[in-house]
Length: 260
Image 1 (cartoon, rainbow, N blue to C red):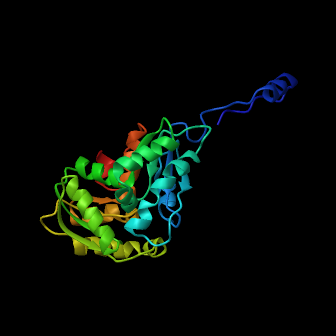
Image 2 (spheres, helix red, strand yellow; image 1 turned 90 degrees about the vertical axis):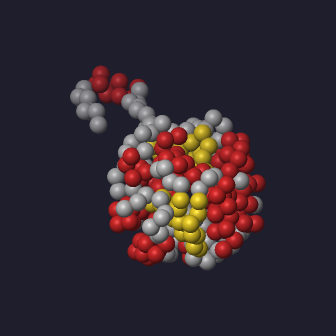
Image 3 (spheres, rainbow, N blue to C red; image 1 turned 60 degrees about the vertical axis):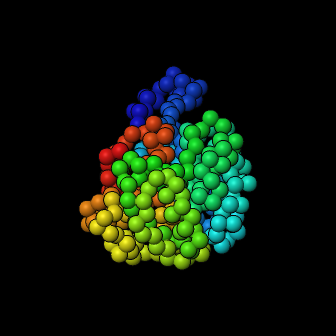
């Protein structure tokens, strides 16, 4: 912080005449995230892990409580409006739809188009797209998928990944229908779950869904398995930072954010 000036009359007049200003807390970048209504993990994960000088800002798009393809697809109609509510007078560097299965249900191209309508000039991102890019950056070809999803959403994710050129060796969903359940899955269970999912012939383990607290244990899982582990919030954080021109390497979040 600048040293205070002396307290004589001239200096007091100068101080009162004009405030000293800097770039603010978000001088390096401003990143916006559109969440679904009951999401309770992503906001804290993004704020906790953002590098100094990068701001994270949030809005929520309405949808029914139950997590299904149909309910998630309804978010498309409100993505632009939700994005427009985030720093409307200051502008964002990046705007992201922060839902993996939601991106798949809406469609990646449609997601980007709707976000761009609401946050003009911002680069657009999606959680599923961040996962896809993260797997590519890590050189992954064959993987196993774990998620909290019901079978329908897990199958959607398998199709999305296969369409992006990845070979799914196995896919397992926990069968949870509500965010209020997904957020309660313990990190120690996620650690054990990843080990139960892994196969020797898999290049990587993917833990899908922003509601899971996977980012808390992703580095430990990766070190234990000796192979890349990608989880949704880690991948979205990496993608949004790189889109914003922030190249910081972050510790304790896996190889993705240490090396790419």
